[in-house]
Image (cartoon, rainbow, N blue to C red; front, side, top):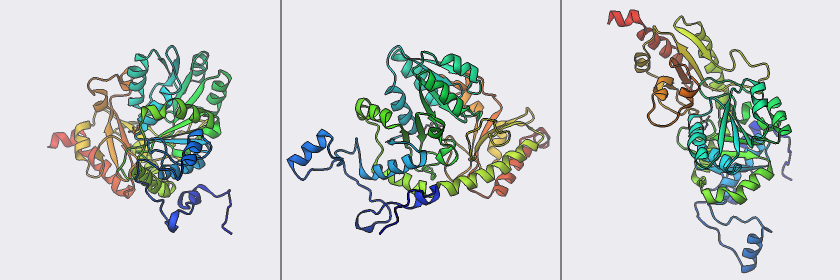
Amino acid sequence: MANKDTRLSVDTLLVHDQRHSKGAVAPPIYQTSLFTFDSYQAMVDRFRGDTEQAVYSRIDNPTVSVLLEKMCQLEGGEKALAFSSGIAAISNAILGLVKAGDRIVCVRHCYPDTYRLLQLICARFGVTTQFVDGTDLKEIEHALPGAKLLYLESPTTQLFEEQDLNRIATLARAADVITVIDNSWATPIFQKPIDSGIDLVVHSASKYISGHSDTVAGLLVGTGALIDKLTSETTPYLGAKLSAQEAALLLRGLRTLPLRLQRHQTSALVIAKRLREHPAVTAVHHPGLSPAPYSALTGYGGLFSFEADDSIDIPTFCNSLGLFRLGVSWGGYESLIMPAEVSINQAGAPSAAIDFGVPARLIRLFVGLEDPEDLWRDLDTALALASPAETDNA
Ligand SMILES: *Cc1c(COP(=O)(O)O)cnc(C)c1O
């Protein structure tokens, strides 16, 4: 008799799959657009909703289903959906829950493209957004009455400010406002928002869940009622499905997620603490250095930011790095650097970084899986090369 223990820890759940066909240890990749029926009656039963056979890969696919089941177990949600990108998960969740005339409340320093989705697309359909300081419970409480949806991201992009998820979820329930949170930074390994009372959790799975910088994908987990509403009214008609191939990549990523996060956490804390002691660094924004009293985090990943004083020439600093590479995104194996001034000067689109004042001398770091001592030497040397004494000598 197979062991059916349901109290398995996350580490075990993530490496222990159900048995797949023919004893395959990795789930088969169902590279097929459609699934045929054995009989007329089988087709009728499926379309009536009496059976669960997959029909068409825009709607469901068995490889994707394995991933969704794992995500439900991880986040403690009832149902999940997978998308072709994180922003597809976010846009499907938001567009599927609001209508013209509704108001969304959103934390100020959300992911830049979430900001643009709200300011460009939602606004075009008569949905307004009120941006609030996520650390100010009173401001959130005042904004909630009459709102349809509260959008959270904890910690926030760039400044990594946390929100009090337990108290905010209680306030939102009382005001009958649906809560959605972007949990890409913490992943369910370090934060489980559904346990705090949040309704829906979105992920850019392009980051830690993939973990190998080789795919773009999104996930959404939540209550059965809300996910059913989305699958009956929205997601099939927006059509941003995840492919079976990419679902298999995400399943591969999940197997090592807890291990990788431990390494990112330890290395990033070492580097954040040393940066805080550096004479040219004026601030370090890392939720682990001065945790919020209400923090829902049980650990920290590799992404944080710091501010350099005027003595540092930021372009020289970036160009002097050998291991940290200039790039957007994060969550893979490789260390990355992203100076805020580059995104602040991005052409065209509306920017939360400008509208809500992200410091121009802020630099975001992603600490990868390399040896932290090598990474520190890289940063320390580049800071020295970018300071005026060095520039004068040159
Ligand atoms: C990258 C990112 C997104 C967008 O995800 P994509 O997979 O690039 O569409 C959303 N939220 C956060 C916090 C991100 O870092």
